[in-house]
Image (cartoon, rainbow, N blue to C red; front, side):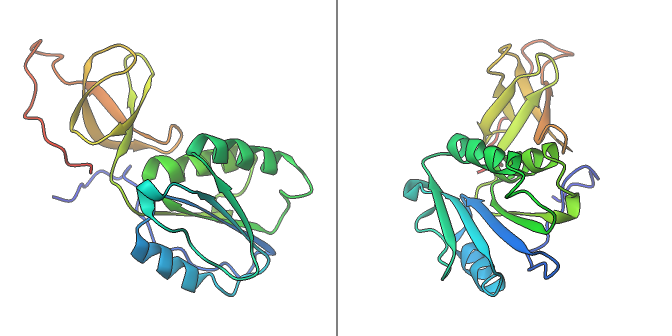
Length: 197
């Protein structure tokens, strides 16, 4: 069933922005098919920098470009920190920078949030979901973030409440909303499934 919720992001395939003067591809957890398609679509862009989490247990080999500056990281946190630092540097974060982000929703929206924090225009950052459907869930009760969520009901890591994972997505928080699943009848939960694998 497709959601009619208008907050749910809609994604288009990443495409080269020829108005850019420098290009960064940032990726983690993307499917092999999407990695190949993106490498072909963006192959002619120059100068290109590649930012990737190198975790073969999650997504196998990385994207390969010729004549690019490649930066690999051990995990998301290391990439986020380096990305944030690079955007603070006024010599690298200038007008004309275009960022292409490919990966899971928590990953792509985390990158987008960092870029927005450094005042990059929304049109300068393209995002495409690829790979796992795991979600980041924000608890509306205690404000904790829960990662990675694969079930429709999850115990909050902050307050312990059983949260129903809503299809409402907050771009500001880069997360789906979680509300107490048994608020009306304590202990009465909906059927639990794993729709976000």
